[in-house]
Image 1: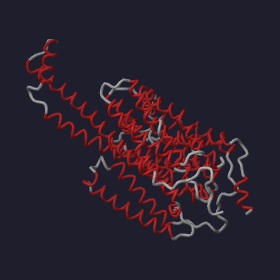
Image 2: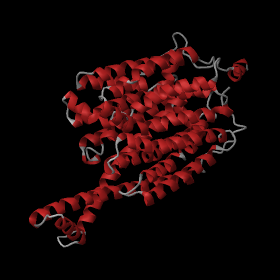
Image 3: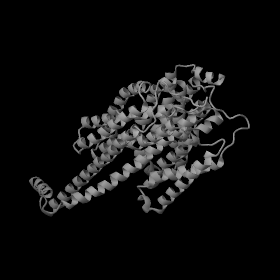
Image 4: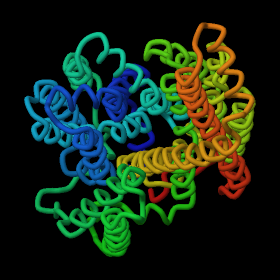
Length: 524
């Protein structure tokens, strides 16, 4: 009883919003680095004398190391203490960022990126857990709204910021900018963050490292992440390498669940999935990561690849959506303490679906800057209604000393969902573009109106004969490729909109929770 009273009575010494801003900054820095290097790969490969294929491992090594650490952050926190673990992660992330920026060769850069991913793996879940314990349950929604901004805006801004830095300075600065931010955040965390008295800590002689569980986790997650990252590039199951990765991942992750279920000190708290709210929230986080995140990165990609926008111009378009999030997030944060999560999530999914389908009517190679900004607003506005209630409800019914494990697993499933979404979207874009190229090419012939009009236009400018025909064919082919690519983006939005519509109906299968009378910390 005394222990339960301690849980309820504890409050952080400093303003919880100050704590939230400090830890959210650390999380934002880490999430940004999951995508900031994407556009710099050609520069990295050229500077370090590596092939483009080798350069893609700059992304993969980070994601693999990050994914391995995420599910075990609860165990590491119990071993080291949350604050000490959080500061250690910031230190590792900051030092490895410096090593990335100074790397003289590709092997050293890949090693530094793996170290950076491992250090960054603890930043998101610990930030979320610190927010969860710094605010009373009825105010957590507002805190998680801030966390959702960092988790959703940073991946969309990463490629844009990375492109701007690379174009104006050097690819090395996309890593070196983490140094001052990391040092500042480390000092602020040391000053303002504290461990609650109810956090689980291993007693002397109690800690046992689960080597079997960790080995299964590392191998299974590594195979899964490489499969998702390299699948489209290697033609999915047409590749023996990819097929081997899938089998390895399925066997190892299945064995991991069975093994961890029977451990007294599991390195991954798989039994948390017995809690209906937690498992339901994880499903929502996974699908939201796959569907919603994919939608938010498609528009900037479309503008830069097909419309010729610079990274800075695309960033301005994204900022319209980010600005809308700043308006909707506080509202959602307040509503989470008044409205059952299932209804907020349903609103988010139906609004997301409507926005995605309406995007297909607005999108073309003639889309204006203003229309593109409106599309981003429609796609960013519903995000808070999905992510914030899902994060909040994941803690309902969970023992308070398990908040670190909850945070690690929810962030893990969201990140895997993002990887799945990115892989699926990339595949749809590629396959549908090939389909539309074939379909549009069938409509062209030497006497087609498009070619005839092009020849006539060239003739009015003094071109004629075989040269005009060759130039005309090249121009028409270029236009055909652009139209096929645009149609493939529209098809992708249709697929994402359909998935969001399906999730609207599934939202009502979630267990109803009364935000005013929910047993937040079961087991005490």
